[in-house]
Amino acid sequence: MNMNHFLFLFFILLFGACSAKSNSSTGVQQKHTEELEAIHASDSLLTEWDLVRMLDKKDLFRLEALLQEKRSELPPYIVLYLDANLQNAFNQTEQSLQTINKLLDNYSESLSDALLYRVYAIKYDNLFKQYRYNKAAEALEIAIDKYGHAVDSVWLAVVREKDYNFVRSLKGFPVQKMHITTDVSIPVSLNEYNHIIMNVSSGGQSENFIFDTGASNVISESCARRMGIRIFESKASTVGAVDKQVQLKVGLADKLRIGDLMFENVVFKVMPDESLSFPEANYVIHGIIGFPVMNQMKEIEICKNKSITVVAHPTKGNSRNLFLDNAMPIVQFEANHDTVLFIMDTGANTTKFSENYFAAHTVEIKEKATSNTIRRGGVGGFVDSEVYELKNVQLKIGGQEMVIPTITVLTDKLSYLTNYDGHLGQDVLMHFNKLTLNFKEMYVSFDN
Picture 1 (cartoon, rainbow, N blue to C red):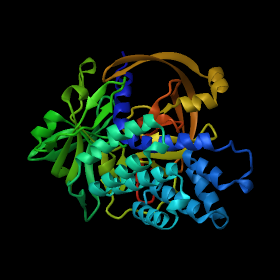
Picture 2 (picture 1 turned 180 degrees about the vertical axis):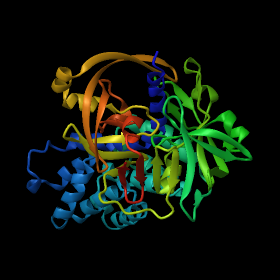
Picture 3 (picture 1 turned 60 degrees about the horizontal axis):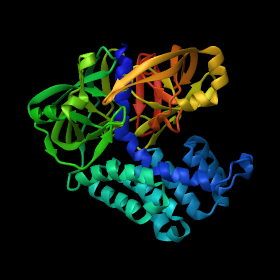
Picture 4 (picture 1 turned 135 degrees about the vertical axis):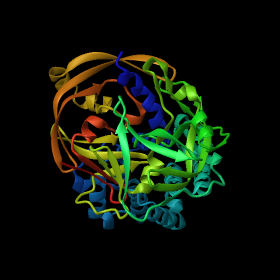
């Protein structure tokens, strides 16, 4: 058995830690889709509701350009609503909060309950990214209790079970802090599954953690206890790779050192040891450093010489090609001359096209690609899936061009890929000597 496939569905669980918050807006998206008619007009004839639909479809770069062009023609509350969402997606959390306050102070009566749910969900996400957990919990509570009736009930239950129960567990936790005065280089290595491994220390103990853009901060319970990380009970849970419910606890590292970087008050999702152990692969995950830490690093250079540099003073990029779907980094680029949106996942060994991409290119893929069946497994069991192997895929991304010999095309629907064409793994991300990931200016670039 190919153990990369075995581990693939497990990392969907870790995506769930990030994508659960994405679900907080999915129910609203479904409502919008039901309420809005299909777009048949040219860009010059687009209505405000067409622009809202573009937001729901994550067509954010085009939306940003059109909003600037049509700003004076739109109702003020729609402009503010779209601005708040775009600012959130481009990681401008404070600007988004200010826009939300202006929207609620002046135009709350103009907004439907479905839109108000989305506004408070975005407010929650902004506050969570600022590590202001009390305020974040308050905003999500308003979204659920006051406006939850206007969104899909299934998704609302997911938000309550995962997001609200988790953030409620963090009430009273202090704000996360990072101490940096100059660029810091952190030694890393790649394990047999091409996961980036870095040494993390706390409480006088150290352990090797995975460095993964596609996950939250995660730690096994035994590792948390060994490293002196305080553990708290929580009602939050997550769903494993094949729909097995996994109960979570909450961990708080008062001080956490990664290389020469010192962090304070780092929150972890604490999982049972068995949920992070894979006997079939002789593989154990002790912990994962995910988006909440990376986001505070702002600019990260990942080099093939097996080091990560955290830049003290982030640089401005030539062009923005990155946005956030809550905590998931999404990058726009070209694949076989089509513009696509991919989740960027340093925890994935290989790049994969999603069922979305397969549905849009079915005829071409069936003509050019080779079909195959893979067995993927993780927490809860195994599943067999039909896939296609697409050869010599041309990519243009981050100022560089490359040809990837083979990319797998998934035919199964995976919830975290609902709006996207696939996810980028190590085969693309490490194709060149250096990958720069900038969460301040929101760009990804590659250098030889």
